[in-house]
Length: 616
Image (cartoon, rainbow, N blue to C red; front, side):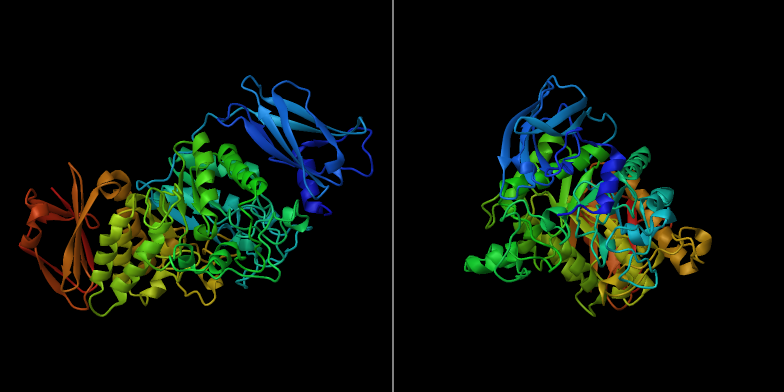
């Protein structure tokens, strides 16, 4: 592989590569990954990947005390060396020369850095106390127009009129609007992947990374990502990093020039995954079908990593540990979780937790039933012989249920009731991320036919139900559209780009309806931020009657009552039915309006409206 001009610029810029005067023309050292490491990690060993023309012929020496070579692995491709090293307990931060010799002659040297571990705010975990805001950096805000087009990359087009090209959003743009998110009540930021995605088409979404250790330069660099993390932590907010262990982009440097034949899952002919998750646990399923599901490529441009290969395992795991320590990440969202090797994912989780005990994960499990979803979780044994250690998932079952609840002509309330009633299958229901929409799903304002009453009820449900709520960017200002195709779900946030005529980040730039829903979300989100009852409180719900669904969040000191009229007509709800939850209370306060009064004999709610009451 000839290294791209872009990567050469990176290596020169970070100043990590040096060559001896006597470097041979036939051999060259072009990169080492991980880029650096730390002293004082719980796991003292790390596997370095050295890459360069014919370096597999070289001998390796590290003569400085503190970093010791344990083993050198020569693989089929002579352009690679895999070196196991150990960081000594007494190792000090600093530079450790790695020397390459051929016929006892020094042919190359790399000054490898060991750093001191950070003592700043980091790895707090993402929990039910949080409200996650999901955004796509390319479509949110352009804070640095100088990085919109970069020569040497495979895609240089920037065209905001096209849903397929890059639009120019970046990490600086996100930093510029952190106060907006904080004011809204957001406590955690999840961005779609920010690693280099040097793909010829649709590189904006980030799910086909071509580098494991570099931020896409059209988003910024590692320093600006660290700045984002620090500024979030200053506001007592958290950073969720989107990881993709299952696959990489077709132009990933290890795909262009593979280290070994089994680095990827490859087939005699191109084989795409079947997307049939049930083949993994079907007691009657075939091995061929299971292999295709797990080892088939996600799409033709996303090669499937062979997670049974121990070198691949270390490469993936170390890169994720590296980002946590380097940036101070608080949690991972794991892309396409069911397509990974589950034994590897359990080991991956253990390795990360060994270094960061408070770190949390939630996996994308876009499946069609509660049992299918439960299968991938850790701590349960229903049809599962591997404890994946996964705490939570993106709860697609509740996502389906809330859409049905608001759109069914009758009996929609039972969809929510029965879905939540299946929580007994989950070890940690509070660890699940609940959502109305995301970067792959129809925007919920369109799902409910742009009906404000339905939409407000949905947002009320999201911010009062069990689990970790997640809002997709623009949902708070009524962004809409269906996934036909998915680019329509990924439009720009108006006001985030220099040429925008409207600024939805400002109250004055929003319509009356947009401000109505923005204020509704902000009111509930900030109440939730201050009241643990809506974070970790118990939940009790009642069998729906006349398509009215009532549930309570409660603990020793607080009780919140939520009444959802999901019927197509106005309904009257007797308070007597819920006496087991309200017999202590005399006063009910509407959390949204702030109005208080004695608890009445009944409540009357218009169709599709939801009432949230604090009981005292």
